[in-house]
Length: 180
Image (tube, rainbow, N blue to C red):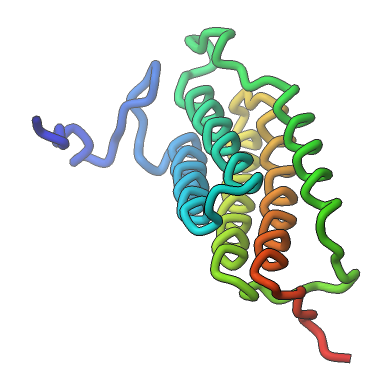
């Protein structure tokens, strides 16, 4: 089985409903989301079998749902591919639940107190980039489901608190960015 088609050698790619240039804003957003789910997967491989790991699996599945929705042109997208608002509520509930287990300083902190925590912080920054790409896509006039932006905005909070949970599990307290 060949894994390549050579069709993209001209700088274009297939989305569901159209052939577009590889620098199309939808392709940029999809690429950033693909990076995000890969960074989350790396993090998940480091956290072990914990509540954080279960949340990360759900998040990866949500990101694939978002990518599926974005891969369709709006006029061809089946309604069943619309990303649901209830996923934002789930994400908020999981973030709140994790936040109850750790105490945070009110100041900025330095990532890197544990390997899983650092990986989650990297994933958080990749998600932030994906969020910026989704915003850029919406500003082009693409009919972006507003639940996608809400989800991506909340996702960075979940990843931040998950990193702190992992740091705490490793016996490390947050390190303040500023010394007093």
